[in-house]
Length: 170
Image (cartoon, rainbow, N blue to C red; front, side):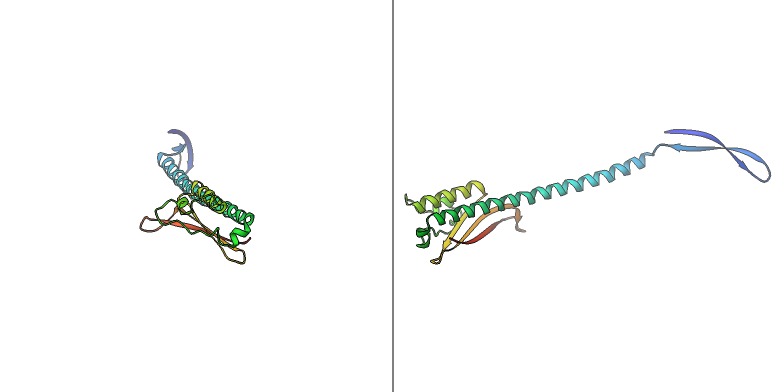
């Protein structure tokens, strides 16, 4: 710490005398510590905002993937409209704990190949991803896709699946 002595002349009614004054230059250790604490709290807050933003961005990415996959199967339904209207593309979610591709009937019929390919795409794009398709006789198609997100957790620690549903006329 740098100190400098400067003479200060004080005028008193009785006499003139010189008083030495000590003037501090620089900052004290306490001021530096307070500044470090304030900056640290600000940086921790910024890190929290970045982490929250990253989670929200990942959730948006998953929803985008689900949107693309639902449009994919809707286009497949439109290409095979006659089979779709007959109910050949109707499929439910796989049973809990089983492989979603196993819920597609085996065989080489076009609807089975399309559904198997679509469910395989869901599995690779989304964690624990699975899909469901229903088509009524009027051509109204409902596509539901579900997956597990780490962002959405129940209070007991179990993972709650997210479901995305799209409706379209084929």
